[in-house]
Structures are given as structure tokens and as C-alpha cells.
Image 1 (cartoon, rainbow over the protein chains, first blue to last red):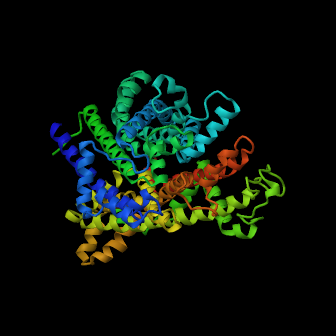
Image 2 (cartoon, each protein chain N blue to C red; image 1 turned 30 degrees about the vertical axis):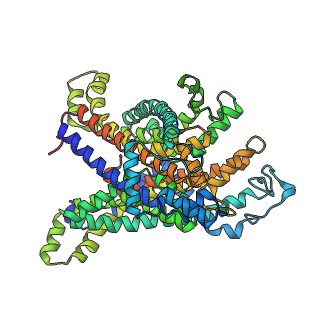
Length: 315
Length: 291
């Protein structure tokens, strides 16, 4: 197990290193000079040249990359090109908010998705299954900005029971922020809910057809006991992987949802960075998201290994 | 039995069985119908559109739906129906070309990777893993944010992002097919790699590829619409659906229809494509219906 974890960790670090190359090169595609972007179009050539020297832009690109990467790992994420403030505290504050929203969403959609998936599997091809499968497929396909705005229209504007706008102060405590988290969390959840339900459904159907389930049935065990002791134990294992694979989707969903609700998370900061062409901010946020994504995948792998003693790891 | 037939020899009765099975899934029929209507609208749009998509009529701002303006008018008095109709062309061409690009590249890389195996396979798949380690929307945003969201750039980004997913599906099918007897037989007959790849393996890759392509198409629409909403879609004056929704938020209290019609259209199309994709899976991959 330890060897497996170390091997996976090595793979992830290698992947992240290559991802950092992609992120760095993509952001270097920015047309025009960073110094020009900072100083505006009316800057004198001398001012641009001075700033280029100051920012180290006259060095070879490889040196710039290496310097950027090592600084990032050391925790020096640079200074925003727009606000001239350190980007790390700014991002960390927003990261807390995004994690808050992500946790509330996960706590909502994972159990509900599993429940719906199991109900659908138990009623395979009957009305309940068709309804759950159809509706969850429809929601899985709806972009967050569509569901989010429809939810705002119904729950916030027409019924007026929840706030339409979640642009709270970035430092708001969880308790105070909670009412503002409900609508965004539902929005994020609706996309992933259908995915979890679908996957749970298919793995549960597989297990229901397995020999050991039939054996347990024929032994005369009560239905619920067969379900909890034999079926769910096995059918929920793949769900761990499914939840982890959905994290990439969740991150995309958070970015769009934060934009819809004006919620002060990492996603909204990224959009702000892109609008202002704040290269330093974009690079730091991208690296952070890739790191969070990679490590949540690692965590899911490990969890899967712990939950399922049958699989041979490593080797 | 499958492995002594080549995939081209599909029993005729399977088609009639498929149609029978299809009738049991109303969602699939709804999907096919919706997508059919959208394709028709995108094609004949310019001939039936009542107004130009950027024609302004400032005396008729924010009007609700009427006989003259089926979906009402927006903040500049532009006809929302005409704009939605014009936007559907962009959606189909951009998401469609992006998907096509991803499918062609993914098919090539997946076939090569799966067929060659060894170091080439290892390197290609590691590279795919790296691409997959960056969430698609994030990568799309930083690329389009730096190079600018022109039509071509959006197509390239969508195509590029979905290569790994397609390549993985194709590769896994190739790995499976490669070990079958009919491939061995072809090798023993002395067929060259080109023949084996195109005449023996490719036909077996096509059904799962079609299903994957339809799924990628629905994700592409999702992605393109989301990018539009974030301001990284096709730029004005082109009527991008996502951007129409985003701009309409300002007038929601006065004129909710400015937002609801384009949002509803996106919803209908995405749902239609998702149901179609599910239906294709049922028809083309009868063995693996669940999943």
C-alpha cells in the first residue's frame, strides 16, 4: 500500500510538473509584452525597458520558467500585475470560500445521487428508473449558468426565500455565509448529481445480477439485509472513483457558478484575472487548481484501496 | 460468436430489434426529435428568420412575446427569436467542428497508441494524462483568455481539450480487438498493418466512437455555452447564446423573457443531444447498455 501511494505520488508530481509547463507556456502566448500590459499603451519605450529588466523578462524563457516554478513551490506566488498586492493571501482567502461551497455541494449531491441511483437500479427499466435516469441526464447536461439563473428566478426573485446574489465579503464566517451558499450549492450539485446517480445505478445493477447476490437471496435473507450487507457494500465502491473523477467537473462548475452568483471564490478571482490580463494571478490560480485536482484524485485512489481489500495494488 | 464475425457483418435482425427496443425508451425519441428540429433550424434559419439578428428597433425595447416578435425583444429592440436562430448556427459549427477535430485526432492517436503498444503507447498516454490533469474549463479559459476568443480559437481549444477522452476510448477498444482471432488470422494471411488497422480494427472502433462523439458533442455545447457566459465566447455582434443570457441578467426583473428564451433553447438542445447520445449507446452498443 505504501509503495503504491508513493508510486502514485511520484506520478502526480510528474504530471503536475508537465501541467506547469503547459500553464506557463499558454500564459506566455499573451500577445504583447507583459510590461506593456502593466504600463498601458502610452508608456515610453524607456519605461517599458526598465520594467522588463525589473520583472526579469529579458532573461531566457527557460530561466523565467524555472524561477517561476521554484518560487511557486517556495510559496512566493508573485505580486498581482493589477492591484500590486501579493497574490497568495488573496487567493488563499478565496480558496477557503470555494472549498466551503464545494463541501456544501458534495455533502448535498453525493448522498442524494447514491440514493437516486440505488432507487433507479432496484426499479430497473420501470417508471421510477426511467424518470430518475431521464431527469438526471437532463440536469447533467444543463450548464450551471442556466440552472443557476432559473433557480434565482424561481427561489430568489419569484418566491423571495433565498438571496439572489452571493457576493458576500470574502472573510465572512461559514455560519453567516451559509444562507448565501444554498443556491450556488444546489446549482453546482445538479450537474454532478445526475452523474453520480447514473454511475451508482449501473454498478448496483451489476451487483444485483451477481451470483453472490442471488445466493444471498436464495438463502432467504430479508431483502433489506441483502441490500445493505451484500449489494451496497460492493456497488458503492466504484462511487468513490466516480466522485473523484467528477472533481474536475465540480471545479468547472464552481467557476461558472461563482460567476453566476458573484460568490467570492477562486473561480471569480480567475475570471477577474483573465479580464484584467493579470498573468501572475492566472498562473498562480491555475497551478493551485491543478494541485487540488491531482491530490483529490490521489486521495480517492487511496480511499478506494482502503475500502476494497480485494484489489491488488502496486505490482 | 462475435469474434468469428468481422464487425461489418451485422445481422439484419439486429436493426429491427433495435427499433423495437427504442420504442421502449421515450427519452431517446425525444432526443432524436429535438436534435432533428435544431439541425433543421440551423440550416434553414437564414431563410425563415423574421429580422436580422443585429437589427435594432429602439422604439420596441424589451417587448414581451407577440405575433411580430415570437420570443419578444431585448434591450436594443432586437428580435430575440432571430438572435436565437442565428446563434444556433454558431453553436453547431463551433461545437460540431471542435468535436470533429477531437474525434479525428483522438481516433488517430488512440489507434496508433493501442496498436503499437510499448513505449509509444506509454508516452502518448502519459501526455494524455497530463492534459486530463487540468480541468477542461480552466484550460479553455486560460488559453482563450490569452489568445482571444475568435471562432477558430474556440474550435481549436474545444478540439484539443477533448482529444484525450476520445483517444482513451479508441485505445481501449483497439487493445481489446487486437487479441481477437480474426486479427491473428489476418496477420497469418500476411496482411499489412494498414489493412489490419483500417479494414479489421476500424470497423469495430466505429460504434463506440460514434457514442463517444455524440457525448463529446453535448459536452462541447456545454463548454462553448459556458465560455460564452463567461465572456470568452464568440464576440458581439454575433449572437452567442451564453453571452445573450449573461447580458440579459441586467433586465431580468423587467423582462425575464430576454433571459429565459435563450436559456431555454440551450437547455432544450443540450438535453436533446444527451438523450440522443444515450439512444445511440443503446442502439450501437447493446451489450453495454448500463453505464
